[in-house]
Length: 290
Image (cartoon, rainbow, N blue to C red; front, side, top):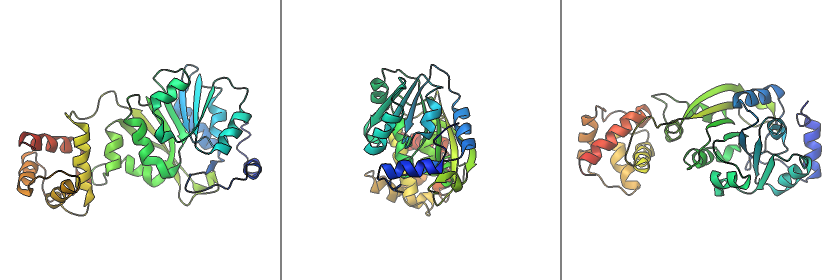
């Protein structure tokens, strides 16, 4: 049985480290063995797999990953926790521990530290405060994970898996690179200390090809972001100001014409627009000389 699924052991370890869990660092330690088993099952690990785990904390998930994967690369920001992990798993030759900020280290560099090559899997109870930047850090990398199984906030998981009417920049940013699905809802009581909200096990399967073809991905997401800068406004009014705020000046009349050309009603709002429609709009604006 996993020895880290024990609140008394967690409290004792934290006292020994003179460490108090902080919301800012997202230090909520998983206690539910069923949730842990589901994460591991969804990761479908085999002995040849390389896994990157972000924020291993006291090692509850690490304990399960090490006997199942060929290499486990753990990235821990807190030096005290990193030192403890090194001591706890000192006999495991397939553990590669990196102490530092994962957002400043490329996935390719992490793989290099373990003498590993792609593909790899990202499996983690990620710090909630960095969910969006962490997802983009990995999904947009030159070496993205083939599969990600992550614990994230319930509301964030819902936003990522959104359909028309509930889209956000985050939903498009994730769905462009991966097919997301919610595996299970995880109650706050499954953690110590219990966070203020429930969580979800989120599964992201990397797409072999993007769902839309565009000449400039950065420009696509600049257009999407512009639409959401004033999300309550209709697109005909939101896009000119949103683009201007991002340094792109396009006359409103030209935007309205492009919207009509691709069949998007200028009275619609950004949360209703699909990736395919954003791509078509970008193409129409490009054809008009933008």
